[in-house]
Length: 298
Ligand code: GLN
Image 1 (cartoon, rainbow, N blue to C red):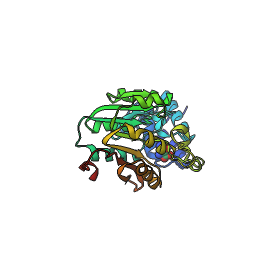
Image 2 (image 1 turned 180 degrees about the vertical axis):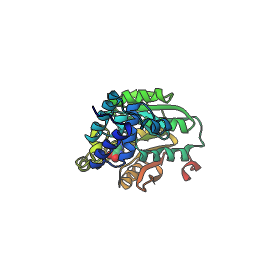
Image 3 (image 1 turned 90 degrees about the horizontal axis):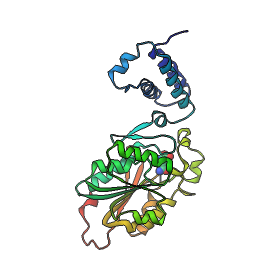
């Protein structure tokens, strides 16, 4: 039987990935080989290991990962863990993959609320829990509540709470269920990355995205169902002076800002992600507060 070094094996599958037009194939192949070897591919030990002859079992395991990837499965599911805001999150089939674009929400919240203490933070449609947990680690957070409906996503969410030593209260249920609404505390910040993909966009999703749960993507015909209902219901769960912060899809800023304004939010703004795409919309609930606090003017 021909024996390969890990490097030869890697190059063989790298070509297959490149042939399948997988972007960043070199990055992905190293991640998958590192996973099969149980070595972080950024560790110098990995580069050394590449020179040695491949173990039959590790070769098999690596090839299985590559085949999944060639079949379109997202790298993040194959690896089982992904980083968000410098923190590790368990992911897999049934939960939305944390995306770098979403880090924009954490940046905005940290900028606006970084000086406040003992914040009550609620993350609706939490998925992996990445937004809420990143906020807990980067704000002075007195209480964090994570709400998630899907059983599969909840399983990852709970693992991520443990993995990150989070103190979060987890609510398993639909954000529109009266019991869930009742259980959500009055919050200084309600954050939400709801499903927002439109019916038309659902037909042309990138292959990898089709592996992710439809329930985390599809936001109704115009993609705006969750913004309308969450804003209407949860404005009553935000303290006076508090903030509602949504992730949005491309070109949804005008509509979502309008929804917040219609529901009486003030200082309604949008902010772009690193690609320059407006990625979030936020506003402040100001009812009895006479003075506009400076937190929103940053
Ligand atoms: N950002 C996801 C995408 O690119 C959508 C996630 C969502 O609907 N919240 O498809």
